[in-house]
Every structure is written in structure tokens, then in C-alpha cells.
Length: 110
Length: 118
Image (cartoon, rainbow over the protein chains, first blue to last red):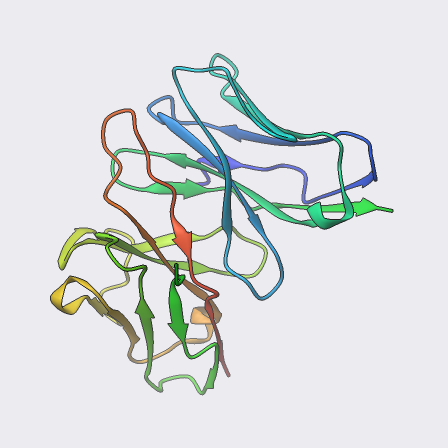
């Protein structure tokens, strides 16, 4: 039972444009959401997070938006850079553990 | 600050053999996690420790998997005997403490151990 879903396995964006990565979840009890970035042969690294009491959190080029009524969050990267090419995972915090999506592979084309 | 260390990085074994993975978390991090990541999927939690106590092991296949965290620092994950479907990357992560209330602490991941069972 996949409680966190990333329905786009891959995304390609031109350098300088906006990248939008999406994530949907099913459990209304999730209270915290995180985005991780993963390069090949490395472990995921934390990127940005948002509490369920907020609807937006911004950190430099990265902004996460949360729509609780739709159980949807998105990560915006503006402007996109070639170094952003990686796999992005969203994660949601349940009562005792975190649930991860299946990831979206982002390719930023120079 | 040193990151989460894992060894080995790669392991190839035959089915029914045993294997063990080691993890050294970031110094001072009370919470340690083991995840299994099968190709094309997101990480799935196997077990979570706070200091040397188990917080959650509901998704650990206890007939073949075991884990321990001695003295609340290093941890080992063992598979005995291995099956073909255990082929995956095993990720160890640590965080300052177990998330509670409305706060959550980011997890720091190690590079993972890629296990291939043939």
C-alpha cells in the first residue's frame, strides 16, 4: 500500500526554467513532509521540508507547496541548473516512521 | 562533521547464504534507521532504533532479518538466509532524535550497501 506517490518517474527541463515535481499522499495523519535529493551511488540528502500547518516553505531556489485538502505537495526549483539533475524523493511523517515516494528523476538540459 | 558510514558498499552472495551490513551514524545522533530500497522504489523502513532500543520493526521480516544497535552507536543488519528478493540497496540513516509533535528532524543517509543475491 503506497501511501506516498510520485506519479511522474522522470522529468526533463531546460536550464534556467522552472522544475515542478509533484507528490500525492493518502494519509491525512501525516504532519510533516520532506524532499530528498539523490545522486547515483550516494544516499539521499535532505533538501527542504514543510510542516502540515504551513502551505509554503522557501529556501533559495527551492520552494515546497502543500495543499492539504488535495493531499498534494510540490517542489519548485527556479531557476533549474544542470547540477539539479538527480532523483527526488518526497517523504511524509506518520506516527512512528517516514514514508517515501518512488522518486522522480529530474534531468536539467544545459 | 563526518557523515553516516556504511560497509560494505557492495556485496554479492548466493541465495541461502548469510550477510551482514554495518552502520556508524553521525556522532550524537540518537535515532538510527535501516531502510531497504528496491530498484525503482522509494526507501522502505525496516527498523528504527532510539539509542539502543527498538522503536519500530513492524516491517522487518523477522524470520530472516535481524538488527542490533549495541551501546546506542553502531548498528548491524543481518540477513540469514538470503532470498533473491532481498536484492536491494540497504540504507542506514540517523537523526538527532525521534521526531515528535510538530517538529521533525531531517535524516542523514549513508551511501548504502548494494546487495545482489544470485
